[in-house]
Image (cartoon, rainbow, N blue to C red):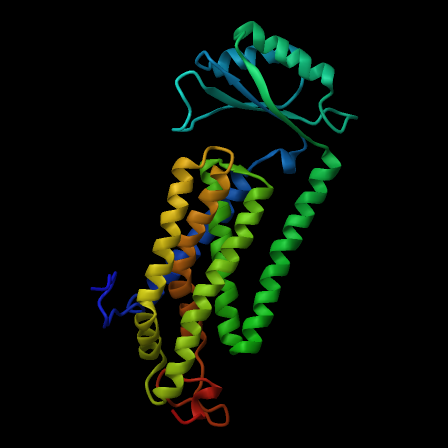
Length: 325
């Protein structure tokens, strides 16, 4: 007996409310951009420049007392965050302390680190520094530029690939879905103020790859069906294509999410931002493959015979439609 997440034959009208779902996606993207501009991102030490210190103590953490202890040192922007993890024991209390890059210095000096450690020891003698990472302002600026170039290059390459493999309408739909996924991921990071660092950029590129894979699977089935159903309107052919690939989509996304949720719960705080980004990306990527990529193709329309006017009542078909089924 085989496990089925969905029936063998489904006939769900995914595009019944295509205008509503597309409008929702646009509103979500606008809200994400607004959050990005107004609230901003909680950049990690990779992008801000400075020093990140991970501490561990036996006694419960008093963030206010920590701030008061380091305030007299005059280090400028100092961020102190308590780290929560279900895997930590009762005597394992962890914080992340971020100190901005000091003027004229690439990183916080050893003398300053000793001063910070001494000040925090006055609050909690059991406190220890378990790791110290430093990034200079010049390096952080280069990392930001490199990250933007990496994501942009991936989107351009995918645009070109889909254009060659399918048609320009499919290419526009695929890239619109990828922009949707990336922007919504940035928006949720801004809303929840999750640390945004180089690991998050790696997660964004992973999301782009995962999302385009799901989109291409649906596009392939759509192209096959456009050859078979030459007089059927585009909306009906698209619904059939999504229904026929629904089981594959849910199985792939579901099994991926099982592994990601396990990592999210048990993987610890070091990789939590990375795993959260991919988990969110799998969810929005699955959504966008249907309700953004396909919606864009539906709105743009594709014709069956490129040598004749489109009189099919919905623009069904592509230039491959004249191939005998």
